[in-house]
Length: 344
Image (tube, rainbow, N blue to C red; front, side, top):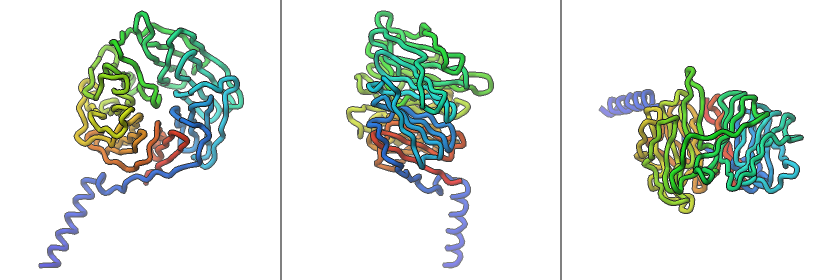
C-alpha cells in the first residue's frame, strides 16, 4: 500500500508539472550590475542580449555592448541639466534621447555617444514630453502632456529614423487634471502585427484612461489626484493581452487598484485578482503570458497575463526592458542596474 501511495504521488507530481509548467519554474533572481554614475535612470532601450542603452539625470546616458559586463558612461555636451527620461536605440552606434521638461530636446548620436546632434527643440511654455516609441527603424512618435489653451496632448513624429521631427496636432483633448507620467517611458505602445498597429496610450492624474485611436476607456485603476493613475503599459506581440500598472507614487507600498489587464486588445480592462506589491512605474511583456513589473518598493512577476502577481524581490527600479528573444530582463533605477537571466 505504501509503495502504491508513493507511486500515485509521483504520478500526480509528473502530471501537475507537465500540464502546469509555470508552477515548476523557479522564482527569477535579480543580479545587480555595476553602480552607475547616474543618480536616476528612467530611460532604457534594449537592442539585443549584448547591447543596451540607458539614460537619466545630469544629462547622462550609458551603453553596454557586452551584455552588461562593462558600461560606457557619457554626458551630452552643454546639456548637463537635462533629465533624459525617454530613449530609443537602434544599435550600438545610433540612439535618440528625449528629455522631460522645458525646453524639450531630442538629441541623436550615430557614433555610439561620442557626439550628439540636436534634431528637435520645442520652447513652448509648459512643454513636457513623456515617451518616445518607434514602429520600425524609420517611423517614430513622441507624446507629451497637454498644452494650454486647447489642452491637447503634445505630439511630434518622424519618418526618417529620427533625423527630422515635425509637430502635429493631437486629436485628443485632455480632461481637467489629466496628464502622462514620465516614469519609465512606457506610456505609449505602438507595434505592427499582421499589417495593423496594436497598442495604445495611457494617462493618469485626475482621470486615468486607455486610448487607442478612438477606443477610449476610463480605467478601473486608482486615480483622482496628481500622484495616482496608470504609469506603464505593455502588450503581448499580437496586442490581444495587455497589462497596465501604476498606483500612487507618494505611497509606494499601497496595492490598492494598482494593476489592470485586458484580454480583448484593450476594449475592456479588469483589476488583477492578486496585485503587485505596491506602486509600479514599469511593466514589460517577457514571453507568453509572463509579465514583469517594477517600482520603488519592489519587483513582481505575473505568469498569467496580469491576473495574479508574485513578488520576487524587494529591490526596486524605475524602468525595465526585455531582450528581443525574451531571455534577459534588464532593470535600472536610482544608482542601480540589474539583470534577470531566464533559463532556456
